[in-house]
Image (cartoon, rainbow, N blue to C red):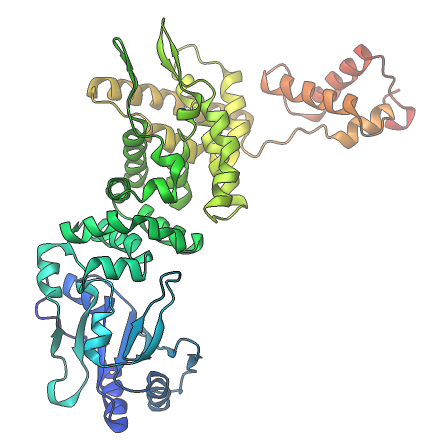
Length: 477
């Protein structure tokens, strides 16, 4: 740790100090920037709090900087933004807040530095560094934030029940910071999250999902989900995921705990460098297992069709969580639907036809799919995992071999619906669809190559079987 925290030697901080002194506004760098200075983490967002008018201070600083950068003012919030080459500055006047039970939006009025620090969510975010001439660079730590950084603890400055009841989003933020920093949540603070969990219902889904995505993008997101589950928040914000938890036994038969399996897959995807959407695919790959769970006395527990149902659920889940419904959702849906397919190809007898079909359906996402499937191999039996990974290596070689030969990534049949209609003088109809499907199946089965002459020859044969006569204009009468 960098103790005591030292402001970088940037002229910018002296400029802010000079402008604040001219206005007779005591000013401080407050919050996450100071925390990250102590932790040695990079940070470019600086919050400056002054005991005075934050917007006026921002404008005064802007006048002193080269090129006089434009100050963006948010009057409703009493804040101002000032971009500089080194960092992004946000200015605000010290304030105190009061809350109404039905809203997390506070009533705000001017306050002292102490009142401003007291309203902060956690002690590690209530640290400050003075920008005032008498003690420039001195640490301000009213709530032992430095001690909590050393103890790796998330704790609220004031009574946690009041902190979380006032602004329930702070419960999500507590889990998020614990996950990002690999900190513990103070026991009293964690108990207060459990007591106040129902208050999360007044928070907008967009804000909840924003924090959830930050947890998912942490180095070990499983830790955050375990905290959310233990605190009772997960059943409220993402019930389908919470329903994965638990093991049911009948006689000698027991299935794995799909919640903890999902978390292991998620961590495996993270370790392999997966982005946010591949991480979401890991979260959702088994999401429909509780809905498809059945007991068969002969084989034990089954989850037949969970991949198809999970894929059908994906748009609804993305809608409920206010996640984007475009390309990202479609990719996640595809991976959920296909995640069992490469595992089925592990058999020695895998055919070129099966590989072609997988390449065709996965398209450009085949590499993501294979990464997800590798991550899905979780077992306490290390020999079994090693055996599966070895077999997966063979499947990947087979995929590469077939792809190089048949170029099935982004595959499009050379015979289009338009060609079929022109050839036989047809209008859009079921017959056209049946012919397209039959041609596609023949190409994927390797009966003909995806080359015009071969495929067109098969089209004529398929048409004859249906009693269709080629049109003279097509040049094939």
